[in-house]
Image (cartoon, rainbow, N blue to C red; front, side, top):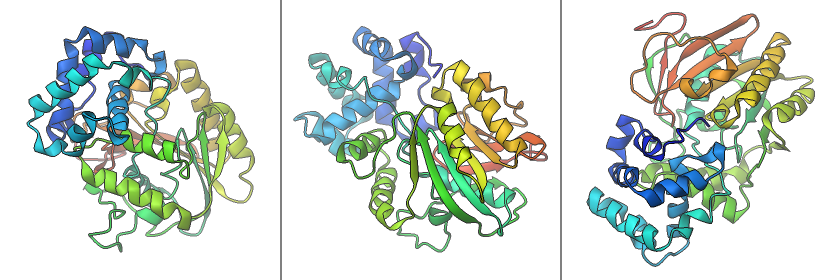
Length: 348
């Protein structure tokens, strides 16, 4: 990921303005870290592709969930603390025990947000026929939580069901299908996580923001439901090799390549190679849906974005099918809303 090598800049821009409003305690901690030499040193010590302030926050959340005597209370009752006071208390703990983060620098902020399935569900309904069999291939999906958009993107779920995903459609796309048929699901990840492994589950849960309990409840519900959902095939390989292997198994179903906040973590060379492979697959009948931050995937040479997103920090949506590759629209990084702008839209 192309995070700034200047730690203060990375901390300052780690959250979009709307997210700073939604999670003021994390925002206050990031603000405190902007002027902290210790926090800067820790960020620089992370691997180049993981110099991500979210990794530091996740490490502290993980330690809190595992019973750290001070962090456990601070994180468990986070919503009861004044933001600046909470951030100050957490930072004081870090000053005394920097290894609370450094021991986790080998980890990655991997895909954990099942809310993105709401975006995939809506986009697929605008693109596919209800009669064709689909082979979903999630590249960089860590635990494969977003391989089930057809199951969780169900409006029939009760409002009280944590797996009822609500995606505000702010500019509608023409829809082709109410339902679509998925016959196969494949996860590609260089370090895939296992839903049955408690440490893997705990780490992905720690990557979520504790000031948003609804996301934590949704993640827990998805983990619990996985044993009732269809099996997935897991390919432990880098993006390009894994995609090659996954495509080789698509014989009777149409491949649908999915990536969401995954290419942003690829090197520039890997972005280029992955994009070449995906485009070749599209020429042979595949569909490619990419939901990424436009400033972090420039090496993939994706089409220019059209119009303006409804909020700063939005992800861009690109679609490639048959002879067409286009910017489809924008989506909230956690699936809160979606906005169609291509080929026509409110500001296109």
